[in-house]
Amino acid sequence: MYIEEQDFAAKKIDWAVWKRLYKYALQHKGLFFTVIVALIFVAAIDIAYPLFTSYAIDNFVVPKSITGLGRFAVLYGILILAQGSGVITFITCAGKLEMAIAYHIRQDAFLRLQELSFSFYDRTAVGYIMARMMSDISRLSDMIAWSLVDVLWSLLFSIGCIITMIVLSWKLALISLCVLPLLVFISIRLQKLMLKHQREARKLNSRITGAFNEGIMGAVTTKTLVREEANANEFNELTGKMKQASIKSALVSASFFPIIMSLGAIGTGLALTLGGQGVLAPETAFVGAISAGTLVAFISYCTQLFDPIQQLANILAEMLGSQASAERVITLMNTEPDVTDRNDILEKYGDILTPHTQNWEPITGNVSFDHVTFQYKSGERVLNDFSLDVKAGQTIALVGETGAGKSTIVNLLCRFYEPTEGSIRIDGTDYRERSQLWLQSSLGYVLQTPHLFSGTIMDNIRFGMPEASDEAVKEAARLVHAEPFILAQEKGYDTEIGESGARLSTGQKQLLSFARVVLKDPRIFVLDEATSSIDTETEQLIQHAITHILKDRTSFIVAHRLSTIRTADRILVIRNGKIQESGTHEELLAQRGYYYDLYTQQFCEDQTAESLGRPETEKSTYDN
Image (cartoon, rainbow, N blue to C red; front, top):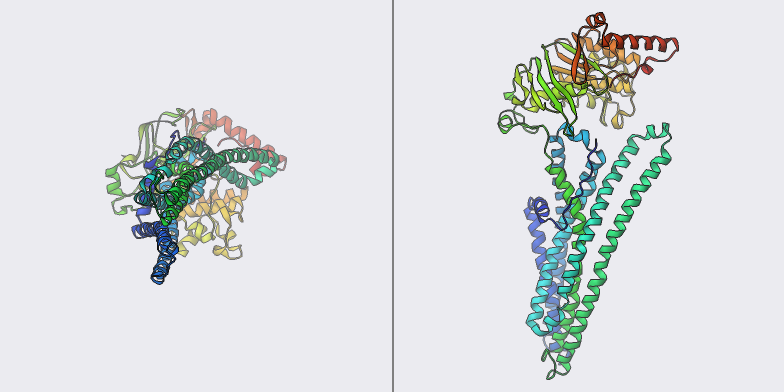
């Protein structure tokens, strides 16, 4: 079952989340502090401009004098050039910082995805992961490198303006700034509503990404079932909900700006009225006598002061919107694997990035399930007191109804999950006393649906063993009888197979999957319905190859076609998480029990299919 998006109940900005994300900026201290210094420099120059204007009015305009004007002009020009240099430095370094932050967050998130257990992917939608890795991380890197850094400029400039205004005329400053408390109150009241709509929009965005992915991956199924109209309606419903959530968020965000502009106009109007009295009638003015230059500087500060406050409100709105993205990215990165190794095991055997292969014991292939019980976190019990001893080199086949527990058994063997009770031993040792990588490096797992990657045939066979030579790759292909079809391709082993092997048939893709596993030379093989979805001719090739490949290797085969497991050393009939019947093919037929009935039923279906001229691939769909 796919997990649902978290709703995140926080009602305000979680500074702990942003503090953690800012650590990514601090990984590039040179860039980060260059941006900070550039911002402080630019803010200081912006604060100085009105003072220069005040000086010019009081010393050149009012007295109608040009004495010292040349030096003033040169200094003013230097100020402009300095500001331009600061802005260029800020833009350049902030752009580099944005890319660096996105790179490192994605790198850490992808590493976390590599570490997460099989169970995470079993219950998590691809759209959820893609939305986190792409749109959410892009939004966060932009926010950290630009918007949140702009907060520093806005704060520095605002504080500088206020201090300068108080120095010029503290009475006029208090009157002009009397609207600020109201502005803060309104901002706090609106942030809760804004955050609610932004979170809903991000949640819907993940679902839309998932719908895109499923629509593309399931295009053939959609066509064959004529689901285009239904899919379009469902998608329109999703996008309509996101549209409404986004509009509501935009409306709340937009309400900030007219409020700020109105309050700013009131503050400026008060400064102009009372300050004008201080210039024209200083003896009766509340603020006392002030010069014309001071009044102009004051008006300039009032006008400019509400610009960064407006920018702060804008950044606050963006930050509240990005809070949902930040929470979801951090949630992904905080997700812990369900299956983990102890610290002492990691110290001895290493992890996925730094394996200590020199400490790995060789695997012979003896496998023992000792009173294993397993249930999922949802509470569903699949295996109950399951015991099984398998000697190295034996081939064990598992058959049974859908949901009987066959795939759970092999997934527990591979340590994709761990027993809820009991233990699984490899060569006599509980596999939890060894690292996951130690076990899984000696496993060969072939799934019912083969998965290939974009690239050449050679690349895909070599995928699990990148250091393998070309000759080793070709030998693996020969062992599974894949070389004839490979050499028939236009470029042989260098043929591009397309995304997910789209240019190959299902049977050809499965042959490459077998070759990939054979190249790895594992001690334990797991074949999970590996021949159930391929044509008869390819199945015969694989069956012939399996006889050779599985020799002297411990093997577990989850079987669909019972005719393919007649040579197994032991066949287990699994029902309700327990072994109901056990024996060789001949022994189970002689018992005339469940296996006998099942085999007889499939035999009759095969005979009927042949008489009707249908291909064998359309035979019984029993088991999964």
